[in-house]
Length: 164
Image (cartoon, helix red, strand yellow):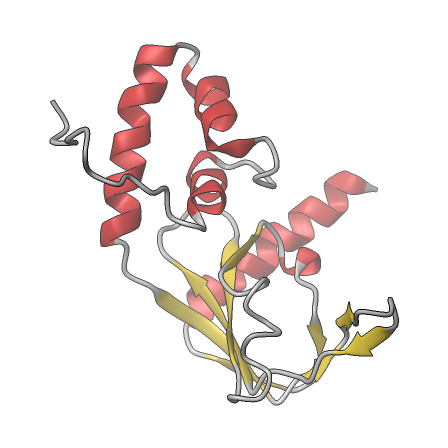
């Protein structure tokens, strides 16, 4: 029915859990795409159909850069083989990206050759609110889409006021 042959290698995209959280308005993706879809649809048949809709959307999505943070400072560290913390060098730029008008955004890191592998784990991570964004601070923010950025700021403020 879906054109998947038994011998085809079917791989779920690395960021599909985050994509499903974004499109189904979950705050985080830790429950996994399957559980999120079941929670939103209520039955396995609808969840199955929604899975393929979201997979198609994911494949055809078009990024919209809302803002860039240039030359931020890094607030992230990793551990070496001896268990010592080693600060990660800062990325050159962080891009705040949306794909739809769903709440939240994705953060993408533009790094130099020296530290691009260090930031790979964080690259393309979904953030439901601006306050949940971590890893960098400071830098020069350049807003590319004022309306979308204002929406993200409003969503963040609404979330903060609900949390108090």
